[in-house]
Amino acid sequence: MDGNLQFILLLALIILIMFVGLMRLGESANEVDWGGLWLNWIDGLNRILCRRFHRLQHNEIVLPETGGALLVCNHISGLDPLLMIAACKRPLRFLIAREEYERFGLHWLLKGVGCIPVDRKGRPEQALREALRVLQQGEVVALFPHGHIHLDSDPPRRLKGGVIWLSQQTKAPIIPMRLTDVFGEGRTISAVFLPSRARLQGFAALDCAGEDGQACLQQIAEYIEGRGEIAGET
Image 1 (cartoon, rainbow, N blue to C red):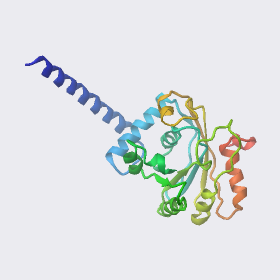
Image 2 (image 1 turned 90 degrees about the vertical axis):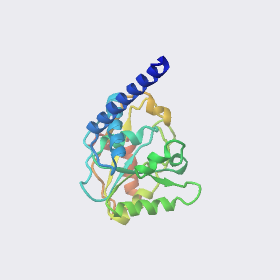
Image 3 (image 1 turned 60 degrees about the vertical axis):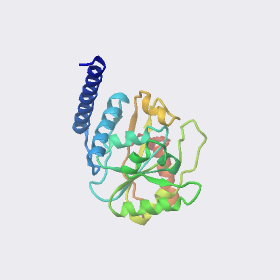
Image 4 (image 1 turned 180 degrees about the horizontal axis):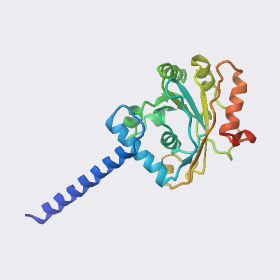
């Protein structure tokens, strides 16, 4: 047999073995049903990535077993959604900027996991209406109320009120979360490849359906920005 052909066959065998190994790893680590074999496999690999490479530590994120819910978190890097997914026991539907949703090479995945694109320069209210529909169908919607990456060292920024409107329309609970210790903070794609000692703290659900919207927004800000004694609660 020709030496080049032998090398190609050996290389193909090695790639096949590695692929099968990754498939088994992903299947064994998968904890959430995303509605498809490939998405479940990616879920498992993401949990391995976050727990081993980024050494994610988190308390129990208490989500309702069924029904709509809203997750809100500070936004410090492009790694944040992966860490949130790895810490939760239900699929999350993220609101993300349309330019990120349409990023080359990632659009198929973001569409597959049900991300909701926000057209920040056009009609952002369309994304809110889609999020409302998703909540009414009993799914979990995740969003970053700062609007985009915002570090603790950045000047204060007013939170966007869409989460309050969604909660008041659906009576869905709001679960605040706070991320810290991501090594690649301030970065997007590269943050995924920089090892971290990520910490994610989830807090008790807030019922803002019948409350003053601005007061609830202020309470959310205190949780996700780690301000005052309230940030020490679990």
